[in-house]
Each structure stands twice: as C-alpha cells, then as structure tokens.
Image (tube, rainbow, N blue to C red):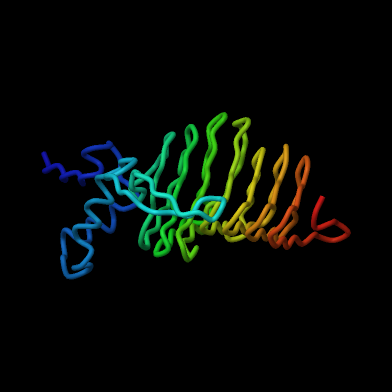
Length: 231
C-alpha cells in the first residue's frame, strides 16, 4: 500500500482545505517563497476566531464628541460579530462573508483599511444592526463588501463615522442612517427609510426607500435611463 499524504493543518482541523491552504503549503515546503509571511499564512489556515483580544480605544460619536470604549479586536480571522463593540486597525483583507448578530458597533481606526473581495457580503440576522464609528481624522475605511436584507427582517445600518465603500455593490436593508462619515454603493435601498443627517452618501445607481429624509450632509445619487436618481 502507498503512504498516505499528510493532511494540511486546515484539513486536519476542518476536514477540508481552506482558501489559504495553497499559500500555506508553498510556505511550509519552501520558506523562501513567502519568508516574511510564513507564520501569517499558517495562522490564516488554522484560525477562524471571532475576536483575538480586547482594546480600549477612543472614537467620535454621532454628535462629534470623543468617547472611550473597550472593544473586541476585529481582523482577517473574524467570521462573525455578535452583540457588542469591536475595533479594526491596520490593513487587512478577507474573502469570506461576515455575519452580524444582535446590535454590533464597529470602530474603524484612522489607520484602518479593510478590503474584501467584491463578492463577499455582510449578512445581518433578524433584528440585527451594524453601527460604524470613526476616529478624529475619519480616515478608516471598509471597502468591497455589499449588504442584502434577504431573508432577514428589521435590520439596519448606521454610519456615525468612518467610511464604507461597497465598490458599486448594493446596500439593500430596512433602515439606513448616515450621521457622519460616508457611505458609497451602487444601489442604496432602505425599504422602511433612508435618513441623511450629515456626512456623505453616494448611490451610483440610485437611492430609494420607503421614506427618504435629507436633513444635512452631501448626497449624490445617479439614476439610469429615464429613472430618477432618488425615489
């Protein structure tokens, strides 16, 4: 009988390869391929936690006031955010969906730059909400992921700071509010309502919803052929 090939760490733990397996295998067999990333690749293949520790950080609230909050750290290993406060820092990317359960608040540090594959989604469970905050300079950004309410109900997105850019993906939820920061997407639809109190909203393919209220800020919405940009 032949000798069985040794399973990768991801296969040993999960019973199947992960998207990072090929990169991990190359690093293990030939450390010169990705010498500075060897440890990182191994961690990616083995770790799928939803928080790697906590950090106390300052953020700017929806009124422009500085607040302090203890947060769970959100990084490339995070698959789900559950009812609480999280913080993201530095540059990282992921190729998986992110699941939101309960009321989640996420602070994007000024140095934060999250990038996701354009086919990834932020999936909110029933009655879940995601609220984004930024810091003093408001330069933190999450780009690439789109939102869709189906099949969940009564879910909402609030931007109190930071920047969310879906790279022309859609934001299709029940309630959407922008107080500070920015939201940029293809189509933005809030079936019960969209409210802009400040900040910036860009809807490349149109802005629609039950009730659209603009109290301030900057709104740019572009319609298609013979279609209104807003409405």
